Image 1: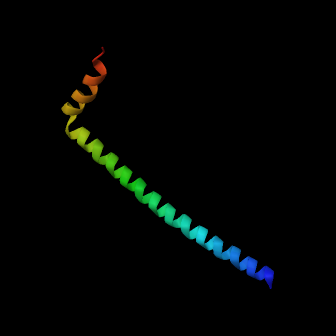
Image 2: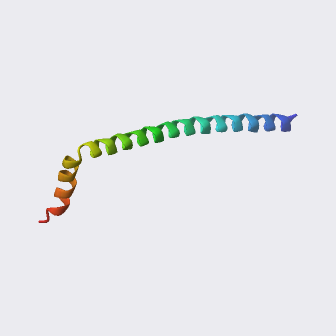
Image 3: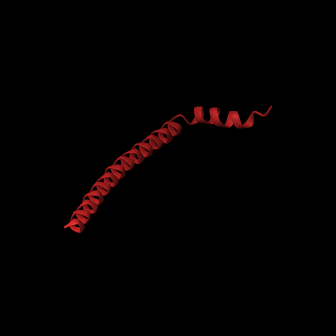
Length: 65
């Protein structure tokens, strides 16, 4: 009787751990998608504003004290 209660408790904890992992995975995947979208937007802006990006990045690296 005691053993079956212990097994049931382990099974319930396992289910909660799995559910927590699935929630974590979903949140992580959504964050990854948002990050990928932000990177795409940044690349698109840099592509559209190529002269500005060139001025910002190349000008900064070429100016030496």
